[in-house]
Amino acid sequence: MLRVRDLTVARGGLAVLEGLTFAVAPGEALVLSGPNGVGKTTLLRTLAGLQPPLAGEIEATGQAAYASHADGVKGQLTVAENLRFWAGIYGTRLTDDVLAAFALADLADRPARTLSAGQLRRTGLARLALTGRPLWLLDEPTVSLDAESVALFAGQVRRHLATGGAAVIASHIDIGLDALRLDLRAYVATETATGRDEAFL
Image (cartoon, rainbow, N blue to C red; front, top):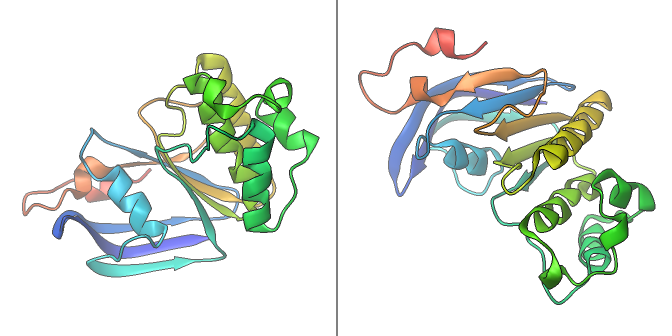
């Protein structure tokens, strides 16, 4: 699904991570960890094709869906109207199953501007189920979610993996997935970076 070889990624023209080599197969998830500023978002944006790498290779099977910190929700539209808009972009269809999967059925006719932060986040994440894309690239997807909503989202990721999808997730919390883990501190772009062999488990 995704293979990365000797990748170097940059922020503001300066290398922040280097020497990244990993693979994510269909049915697998990879969780990226590390402190704020280490380069998680930069790596995800590079994997998504939103910025070029400084060096190395990225090979992906199929298109990726990238979910950033922004929810991408228009406040003047209802929840259902927002999701129908995105379904139209991806050539799919909003179903009751998608609304139920993200606990949005009772909110479908609510204007998005009236939603709580957690409800907005669930609405934004529901777009993933409408993309039809096999690789999900997720940047702190559980921000603003309570424990119940985190468990709900983790269930959707498991369903995606069970159908042959894959995911790369930057997260500060354990969302309960059986996943590969990559500590990006071992790949910080300095001459003294060590421990690369032990970072990918």
